[in-house]
Image 1 (cartoon, rainbow, N blue to C red):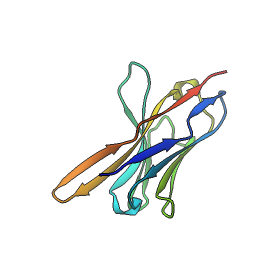
Image 2: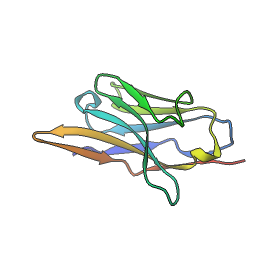
Image 3: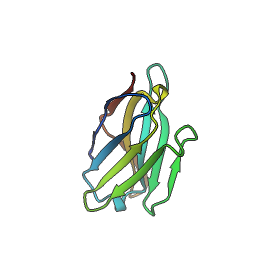
Length: 119
């Protein structure tokens, strides 16, 4: 089992910045990948950013050059630094963890943190 606890959401004005944190209950270098999904009202959950165990990163086209995913192994925490925020970024942000356990791969989710971009 992997527990993920997100923090850092809130209300920010357009053009502002915010950093989300996702603290994992396991060694984050022992998992296949971690990252962030967003889910806006009435929409499906979408992948925003991911970082693999080897440190490779990938971003959705809509956030590339504005968001940065990083990690701190000492704290078992993954971060999502967000710049130049837009109202379209308003959503619940979910941290996820992909972990191979024996013969199967499991996906774990955090509880989600609300990010609202509004003036």
